[in-house]
Image (cartoon, rainbow, N blue to C red; front, side, top):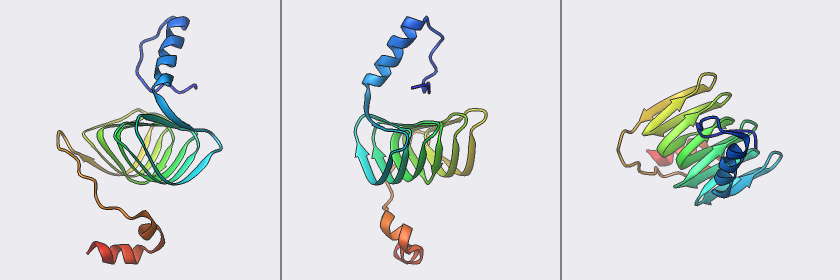
Length: 155
């Protein structure tokens, strides 16, 4: 995996390999390039996405979105580190980091948000500080199929 998601000082090649292997051991799941997943994905641990996910992603842990990934989803996570494309809302209990060449369209809500030079963001940002985030009620099927119905239910 060529993407480096942590700011790790330059190491000797053998030490760098050991460091990468430690990160991979913490990986619970992998959605590979060419894989398309539609629906709700809930998990514990770290997941890396290099394929396409449509729907909703929920975790208290980490979501890594690789450079070639496309996420058309509402994301609720502890931490989100993104180098790919996201269309949808991101709610992170801890942090969101957009790394070049990330392109995110939607809203971001988190305590800590960082944008690397070259990352693109179009949407609304809400900084929560140390507030505990509450998950809003969400009905993806209704909102995707019947926007007017979803708006009526919200009022």
